[in-house]
Picture 1 (cartoon, one colour):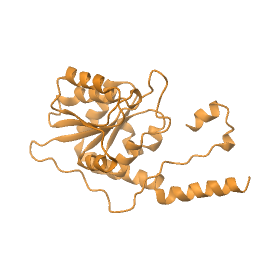
Picture 2 (cartoon, one colour):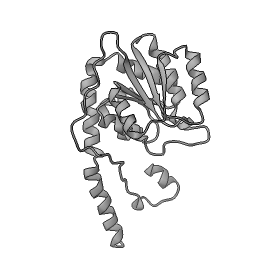
Picture 3 (cartoon, one colour):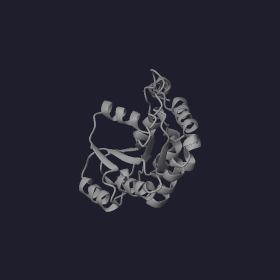
Length: 228
């Protein structure tokens, strides 16, 4: 985002990075529920049903690995104008029973859904009209804060807010096949999930904790207030 501002002509010396902040106070995040014998392995995705969220790509990526992972299911929270198209894509996959649309959820209900998940899938992309995340979808930060491994695209600032240990599960934006391969690599390595969960949580604690970021914002306002 900073590079885009520079390209538009903003002097670099007048650009500051203020990170998205999350309230991380309270108990440590609970581990995902252990699937019962034959129980579902939940992959979660969320966002408005618009082009830049890439949810059609998420459905196609899931479909690419569904045969090799028969216990996996994809649960998508959100609503929006692309709902009919996403429903059609779901029908085309033949996986209606394993791809669930949850509708729009209040934040508290969405966080509860996140706690039920094992993996979070984020397929953000640049839309044909140029629309993009600009920075980063907050679902990616909240997923790591909840200690859930993430599979995502290398869109906008996503690589900058994803724990380095998770970078091998990032794929080029707009490429459903590559996204499916990344998802498959993660699903094939459950023994690594605990380490990846801890890495994501540590990354958010170090860079996106509101307890720290509020002071950084106060210092910026103080600097501006002096007229320097």
